[in-house]
View: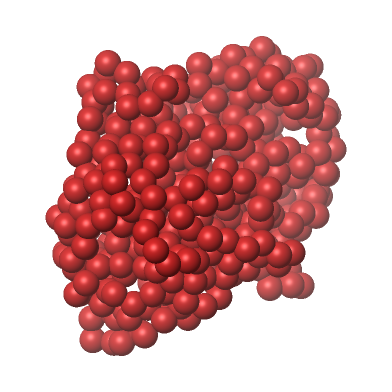
Length: 448
């Protein structure tokens, strides 16, 4: 069963361990970007392991507005994207399809190459802190694009062929790195990007572009060099699995004292998470099909944790794991260095009985952009505490799934509002909850 709409409510009857098997498909942070990359090609592309999530549907709609034919492939979860007839789209249609997604900003480079112009509406996304799009526009200007701000959005033009450039990012932004890659591959000359993001999803996007005919080299010092080519073809690619969703289910197993086999999870992209999971007291077992995560009994251990860009502990892993840390013995310290407002979700956990105190100081040794800037970006979690059911309103994607975990671990019933937002990054999560034995229901209709 799928759930749509920002106002959907789920009743969660907590206290039951989650047990069973679920599957994760392609990464939310790769698949929509690989779909955008198909715009650059002169031939159809084939993308496998595509999850049925809202971000994929948004990009599919935007591609179709621009004349790209998108149809199911021969295998389940496969899309065939044909960009041979790219055309301009109406402003109102773009705005309607984009909704709250930030993905449209990545259409800029490909559309400038294909059409010579692009329109980007106002952008939304999860409210977890500053995610400035200025980086994107600054980068596009360096390639030679002109940008005009109007009431309904940003209009971009490329009077001539875009040109390669040297770019140094002030922070290894994933979105801006993607923007550079999608723009530089067809730009004239060489582009050198310093302080680039190097997440596994970035590497997979580079693999996609290389299959299309791009020339891209990654150095060990976060420098990426792209030699522009005159033409790109299509690709045939299977998306890497979603390591962020896999970690969310792992945290759910820990918080509910459960046992979940995550089919599709891969060790290589989750090594940092797995180390931390083991330090907390969680158990896991890896085979060639996936990873089993479980609570082995006994007390969970408190830890000191700092989020960071890859290969550090991913910020998207932090929120689900914090729920499990409420059940650990002692004081856990969490220092969030990626998004300044990501710890705001903890107020609802305190409402449920957790003891979490937020601080403006940097409670950790890693370099942090938020020091002395008055952001509540460090937390001390005191545990274990017994969580009680409550009324919860989902604030963002990962925070929302974390609320689900908390509700499942709590005693009593919780009303979780806005669960439609979880569809942005978790495929068929309602079905998966039922398969794992969760006692959940939509008002008026029991699901499990």
